Length: 150
Length: 378
Image 1 (spheres, helix red, strand yellow):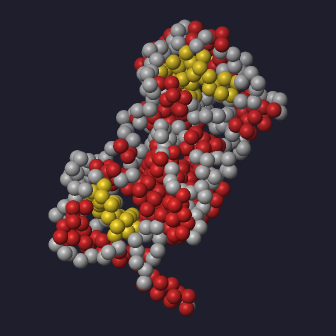
Image 2 (tube, chains in turn green, cyan; image 1 turned 30 degrees about the horizontal axis):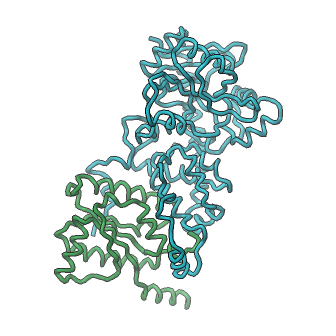
Image 3 (cartoon, chains in turn brown, blue; image 1 turned 45 degrees about the vertical axis):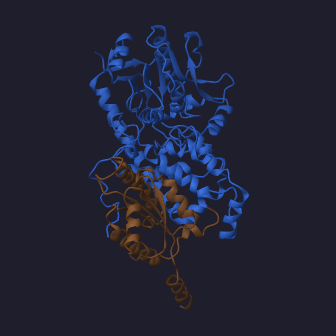
């Protein structure tokens, strides 16, 4: 019982690390917009700018999750809005495959979020980060990152 | 045009009968060369050979129950740079054909001037098991064909073969049918392309009866059913053994990062794999930094990362040939894990690797309205 409480307290104080792989043309710009408009959101995300969500190789996500991240947020343009025509659709397929692998192997695919956030949606970016942070806090630390044998 | 032909078996010897067929292909100039498995003079193994002269066709035996490499790799090697202007007949197992179709779609092989000859497959032994069988003196192929005739399946065949639900060739010009056929009497030779029909015509083979074709189809469905059942049993076990990070690391405990599974995989075609790239040439401080963060890190590093990355790159094209498990020095059931994950990911796109040249590789294409539940909604 006491142990459970301790675990709960640990979870309560836990600040998740989120790696953001954000498209230069939309979500990264949305993050900028959130900043310039002084929109408040949790400081748990570490944004990395990519040229397109379609260039996010699954290995980026895996490396982050095995290397210390509790969640990975991939941000791309809304369907039909991709600067490179179809990068976001391809990202959706790649992330779908990755999530399916996670599901099959009993790993937590809900630590990988793919979100469509346009350059105008600073508020949506802030809300997304807040929601993801909250979700990860409930989940607790990512068990994969704790392993030294991976 | 003849589409379904009969090849009469001489003296009850299937291998010899097929031998004549290969000879005729070369003699009649229907192909200029053959890529075909032949028994090594030393015995103990049957390997793919490229033969251009009839008199060099000494011990062809594509029915031998052993597959040292997935020959799709060889066809890729031969055709990727510039396909030959000459006609080459390639004799392949169903899983090799399927891998080849995937490689063509990945632009790693060309079917130009190839005649694809596929053969029904009853399964194979691992190279080591085959060697041991051969050392016992009698021909493993004869014993194998005898068992097939009696309708028996040796439980020591490779597990991936026992659970392979694609025992018949897809997309071959000529398919040699053995399943459900009375192998003492005849074989079924089917042409499924104009090229195949042209060859059957030139070989002057007799048209087969409708009944033979139906008999084979029925036997194939029965075999597929049996193997699918086996597949589901095995993969359920695999799922239990690998589910969750704890179990996954237990299974990968004996992995030594040799990357053999990647090297023999017909679909892992990248010339420079990410895991051989300068990304992994890191300064000592990098390792020490990780060690500091986690307390300890396993060396060599990036064990699970390698397997999951390889999986995310090629699992939608995995044909389940099982070469990876064969190449693993420490008996990690890589093939079972890939088959398990493969089935689930391929289902997402209703994709069967090697089924059709017209179906693009799932991760190279998209549809506008699909996978609508994948992106998060707030």
